[in-house]
Length: 154
Ligand code: B12
Image (cartoon, rainbow, N blue to C red; front, side, top):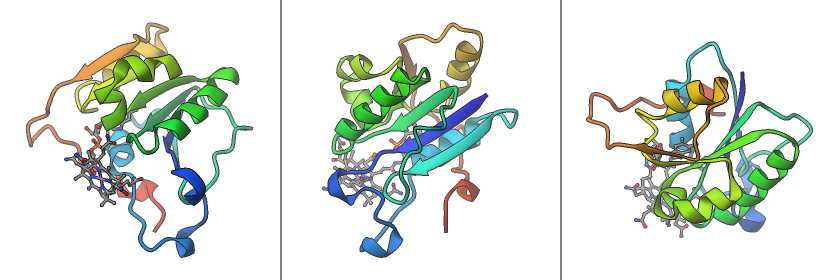
């Protein structure tokens, strides 16, 4: 299964490259999703602050992380991929705070932490039983996944 992980850009700052930013940080939530994803799946990460999303390549599942500031762009990306036939899951602080708004723009909303729900969500998707909402509990420190850093550009 092909899974695209997306960190949406904000406004005009999208995809201007490393040199254009005062400082740039990797989207840790997506590193965690990558760590939790079983190795049989193919994952790709696009951080829109660095690169454009290529809508010509349509994965099976698109997972988008978003804050309130990036929610409008997250919804745009989600809408385009859904038109192209991909399923989209939204997660992060904004969809967790307003899941009923977020579900209007996606097939599925992950509320709270990814640990404990991501693998169940992937299994449900694979077997055609994706639910509209998944609610993650606060993980204990030993359950917390360490972000996979190899998926980030230096
Ligand atoms: C560190 C931090 C930063 C760092 C980011 C470092 C980094 N590497 O990303 C810096 C200083 C750069 C930063 C900047 C900003 N931040 Co900040 N930041 C935080 C802080 C303290 C922790 C965020 C973090 O990295 N958590 C660890 C990651 C792993 O957690 P997470 O993203 O929540 O992801 C988990 C779940 O949400 C879920 N999940 C997330 N995405 C997805 C997606 C899917 C598909 C699924 C299934 C699950 C899932 O699973 C993850 C693992 O369990 C939070 C406060 C907090 N305690 O959360 C504020 C916070 C996120 N920041 C906030 C804000 C407002 C900003 C700025 C907009 C400030 C500004 N005015 O510029 C910018 C935005 C930067 C951007 N990305 O565009 C607000 C967001 C509020 C909101 N409603 O959106 C927060 C909540 C602080 C607050 N209480 O106001 N921030």
